[in-house]
Image 1 (spheres, each protein chain N blue to C red):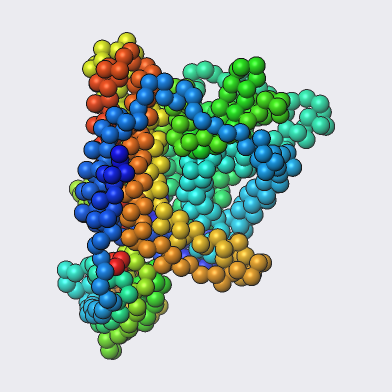
Image 2 (image 1 turned 180 degrees about the horizontal axis):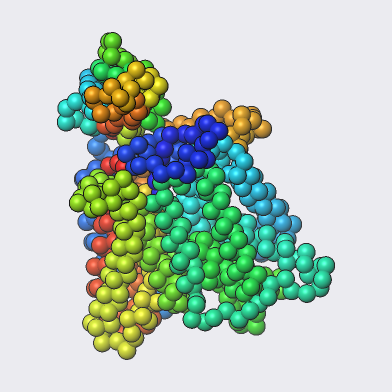
Length: 131
Length: 501
């Protein structure tokens, strides 16, 4: 009996998704140690080719969790990189700022309030949805 | 458990750094124990919720029969040569020796290895393999912890050696206070849950090993003072907790001594003559119905466990972020995560116990039963186990599949010293091993099936303790509401994006 109830349900659910892999591009800007804008979830479909462009006002390292992708980010020029979204899931992105790399910014002469401390700045999450 | 943990610590002062307080803001996400689950989409979530409610009634109508669970099909594996080989003292001796060896490696790695949580085998063994993996095996295969618990094994070694040398009993067998019952296990569970959910440095290998040593000490003292099996039933919380899950499992140990039978009583099994022993396969779930009512201390422990496991999932939702940012935040200051989450960890089990007691009271009320609230709670506690197992599967499957892969590289380098014992040190973690769509269907499938099993089993209990079929059905309305609520909570959690604090 329950088999008859479940069968159409499963068919219905299995039918969603599909389509060919595409491309997606996201521009992220970090200023004053926060991600600019309200967008914190970047959604793509499985298999998509993604291009990220990161503009930052400080030296640091971008870390895309799960994919474990790391890129150096600097204030001189925007950093661009691409990746193929092979694995589905929700992956946090962070910008790690090392204390040492910004050590010219001493506690005494600090006008931004972060001194020479490092920080982990959340850049939201990449969501790769299954096809 | 906290899956978003501090930066790997690499310096010589790692321990000192690890023991100093880290504020939640800087504890954001690195390496060990992360989860990458996509939230279950709204459509699936609503479909599953509707299916759970509708199928509840189908389950009662079709599956529930009086006398359910009194007997059930079982097949003794010892009738076959393969079964006898697995259960032979030789094979068991090998399992035990391997488990002991693994425990020693684990402690050595924790105490003397690197304190980088991802490079040391201890955090993965504790939070992935033991707490998630062994729980899965207990529920879906059988009570493996009864066989491989290093505390049981080490104590038995000591007992055997002592008896061989002196001829006397190692344990003192002091009478166990009846009123104490299973309450020591509840206390120990609470400590464990706090470490798992609240303690910010619970992924630091040295901390874990130290806590495990402390727990080992408590366990050995309990076993020595009261006797091994008495402590396993009342104080060794992991044996008890995994035993709850294993009551659902499709295997059991069984003794039949002149018509006097026991199920999953490992003391009786150990004492029984080989001819009276059975190592049976049985359908999933029937073991819950075959078990006598739990002692109230165990029933409370069960409900507290379920509430805690759900709370652990709740802590990862955006809703909890908003709680953390409530006015309480100012009161706790830099300790907001620890303070508020500790309060939550206290509140969640109390809330669950309150709801369960209220449900039991309503059940007694609608059928005008002579059974008190406590007796009803003791009888029906086990019927919640399938929902808990389902949630555990739904919530942790991809975590186990992804993070569990770390054991391959860690086995070659358990201390994180750059070894490559088996040539597997460079085996990576494939985050694409399970597709999100598969995990979604598995999750909601498990949750709906778990709900149906729970409703069916509760109905079986009702037919047993309430006079007449009509009363049994009536008594189940409050229980249906409780179970629907619990299932909806599980579904809601798997439909939330996981966030780091």
